[in-house]
Image 1 (tube, rainbow, N blue to C red):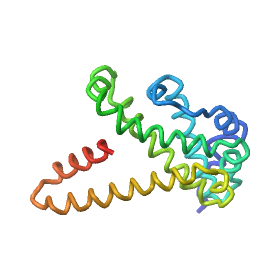
Image 2 (image 1 turned 45 degrees about the vertical axis):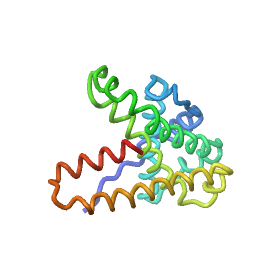
Image 3 (image 1 turned 90 degrees about the vertical axis):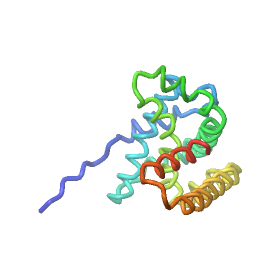
Length: 180
């Protein structure tokens, strides 16, 4: 039985256009129209990168990130959203939830970090992509260290809470992730 697998989700031209237009975003840009547009591009690029890897096809997304020197941009945006989640989001959380027509805007603000991490997982499978990160690789290692520390402290906090309901534990995890 033949399984139907689409050739790709993005063409090479679309991927090159998206990657070429990626920018370092500042804290002020988070949540703006340009930020949401860039988030949409990264979601599509992430899907294509994973599709290409899973189907053992041409990994043109990986090559374009290196060729167009956008690996540092990806890392910079990851670090910016981490700072935004830690410093800005707690202050504007109630306003964002109140003013947005749906919770999807808030979801995408928080999901952005995951999209970048997931895309980098595929990109960094290749040694030349790691080399393209340059000096920002040290910042990325620090980021990973902070996330591992968060997981370790979260696990110890959760192990002390054996009498809590699953809902209470999920709320604790959400609070810990937002504190990060």
